[in-house]
Length: 457
RNA sequence: GUGGUUGUAGCUCAGUUGGUUAGAGCGCUAGAUUGUGGUUCUAGAGGUCGCCGGUUCGAGACCGGUCUUCCACCCCA
Image 1 (cartoon, helix red, strand yellow):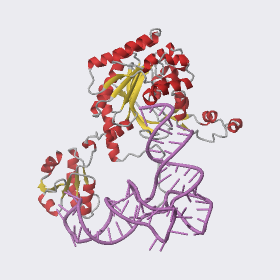
Image 2 (cartoon, protein in one colour):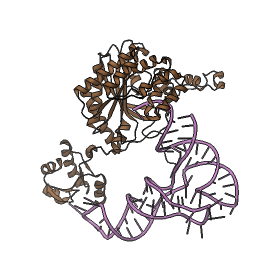
Image 3 (cartoon, chains in turn brown, cyan):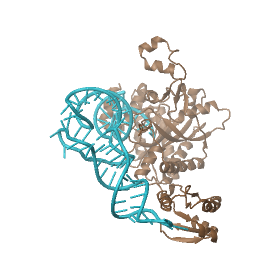
């Protein structure tokens, strides 16, 4: 055998069963997106590098797949840059395009570019693959699908409320009950940073705080110290680490901490409104939970931030995330266009549903009737019936070759086709069809109409 | 990017301190069964032991490199 072909690390082929299950998830998400008034768009797989670079933080830039320029790109590069081996500098000269890293930034670019054609507030959904040059591990791929719903052109908190409901609706439809939707607000985090005098270290501060449930209080403090946040500043955080009580009690103690931060207090008001309103409207099966340590690394979030974690019995990171970004379109030259959105991680949801065995049995669309091929004359007789069945929206097929019957039956068996029709000389003469029900092995003779009636259900 | 881990038949895996011709189960093909799948029985096909190099009289096994798998960190869906 020749050397086996392969696919790049972190990518996957999807076989028919996989595609059927993935479609089931995507169809569920899509129908809810539509129900909430979102419209589909699609954007190119790759963008100009400048569109993507610098939007995801330092770590993000590293994980963006760069596309090499066409032509003899090295000739145009000056020798000094090459000899200095400055990869970053060289990259910007030999690569002008990059694979998209998420769907939000391309969407912001799209909104700015098409601002005169769009009706605002503009609500769009988008389900496409994204690429990250990450090292693969559990639930992490280099090519994966995101399903996003965003609305731009409104800073109404009712959008946040609706997006929480949308999360709840989709997760419930997928039978993913008792998921936790965590909510926080960047303004609260900024307020805390302000109050403790670490405004310039906001990102480092939030990233460290985000790890509280993973590395514990001491770990967080240690990381903050390493990042240059002063000891006295960290001391002021003590109330945060010993956070107790229900949501309103916690919000109260948070208000005390943030009395001197107008921004922080505004964040509290926003979170309070969203949580109270959602609670009063009710959720189907999810829990909405305030988590002040929720940070999310993406630089562009400014208000609410969301994250959905899988049910606790599954070892999996977040299966969705999102938030509000007040100035993402501003980067591309369109001010005062606040946006907020959420994302579903298709591939991780797939893994969770698989592990919890939550896929319905019926996801696979399959051929319903196989006609045995006994020869040309019989095949012609079969094809007439097949056309008729297909007109009635019943998936039917003829075994293409005049193979031994055992082989044709085995084919039906392996494909899990529930019905097999045998039509030879006798059947042609009597204008009937012998139908075999594979599950029971029983056989019966039918007219064409009788055949359709039996096979329909 | 850092650290670890994995790779033997289509699949899941054995393979002793380095020693003749690398095995099993499942699957596959054919037959028992000329108009009947699943169960059974019989026979058969299928391997560059991930790839490249090294040590050795001799390497699937030991050493180096490389690719891949999975995992942790970083970060994230």
